Amino acid sequence: MAEKTAYTQAAVSGKYDKSSGLLGKYDNVRRFWEDQLTGIFLRPSLNDLVQRKSERMERLRILDIGCGNGDGYDLIMDVNSKDAGIFEYITAAITDDRLQTYVGLDINEELLQQAQAGYGQNPKVQFVQADLSNGLPDATLEAPPFDLYFSSYGTFSHFDTEQTVRLMADVCRHASDGALFVGDWLGRYAYEWQDLWHHPVDQEYWMNYRISYIYPEAERDRHDVATFPLRLLCADEILSMAQAAGKAAGCTLRPVKLFDRSVLIGRHMDTGDYNRHCPKMRYAVNSLFEGYTRTDLESVRVNYVPRPGFDALNHHFEMFFMAVNTLVDYTIALLAHHDPGQGVVGNVPEIQPYYPEPLKETMQAMRRVIEGVGWLQWGDVRANVIEPHLGYCLRKLEMELQQGMGTGHSLCGIFEIKK
Ligand SMILES: C[S@@+](CC[C@H](N)C(=O)[O-])C[C@H]1O[C@@H](n2cnc3c(N)ncnc32)[C@H](O)[C@@H]1O
Image 1 (cartoon, rainbow, N blue to C red):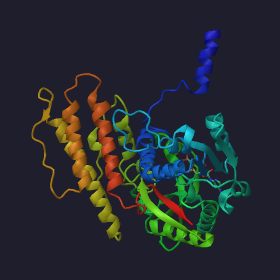
Image 2: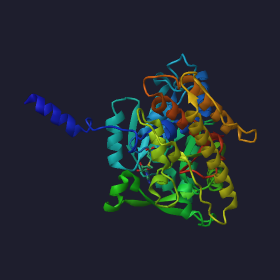
Image 3: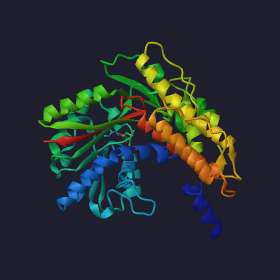
Image 4: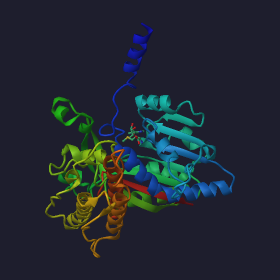
């Protein structure tokens, strides 16, 4: 009887559910690509900040604006201190003893309850309910300044220009010189919503965002899919709001880096809700990262369909997807010609001198990986080593062949507050 109760308890808790990285909020792309890419771009500024604080014998104070269920805490605490050597195992930029406090603000009570359940046992972590559409709440403005004013996964796309400028200006007034602000919006020109590109850029544009991707494809039509407005932006719109906020607060929000996240693998690539031509790249890349699951590499290719009248964007995407396809084709060829007996690849296709540098580097890396491990007879090296590495190479292409213009699902800005 006790046994039955224990199994029932386990089943009801959800902890007994079969887990996979192929679908869901915390799919492989979210963990190995999106969170990591944000962290890699944030790493230099965060390391500088930690260094400056250490030199003053101070610990870090972090404010997460629109924290939801508190995922930003792990994202920040998982950022590496540097490109760690292979032998090191403690690599965090902010070790627990360097953190003074993390405060998460959000309007949504249910999400805050989840956040509290997940992180509330940590005495340095605090969650506060607040509507941020009128700026930072009084209690936050009265607290000592933070060192990092952080947001993630599109939170700032909930605010119009006036609200954004007010919120950023409040951050500027509250912060000390040298603090960091990280804003996270949705990009105006993602391939996954190519149908929406035509809206005039001199006007705010709010898309009707469907969270259709939470349902498996076969079930999507049967559900009443929730929609809500989210603002799409390009780099110029963000920079002009940052300038206005700095001016209002009498300081400067200096842009350190603007970057696109999820150009190739945004969640709506798979739904086709806003561009029926999109290939299901998120599922394909999730599969690359999934252990003991082999991927049809042809499914990781993109047959880009240009939109007439958008020459500069078409040119950018043509080049980017050509690079992706070239790397995938090269990997397919390497696998086809790999000789496990010799541990080498015969008939290697040529790496052309005119290929962009990141493409050349990833092609060379894939060859070294396949020649290095392809001979192993156990542990399914194709599924468990080679395919994940192709995933990381594609991520590198996304990071290095972009301009931070708003061509991804998200557009993030790292700013330094200069007083
Ligand atoms: C896309 S979610 C991101 C959540 C979290 N940062 C993450 O990475 O998972 C946007 C968050 O902004 C919050 N939000 C939207 N409007 C808000 C407002 N007016 N004031 C405070 N929070 C708001 C939502 O409740 C939601 O948690």
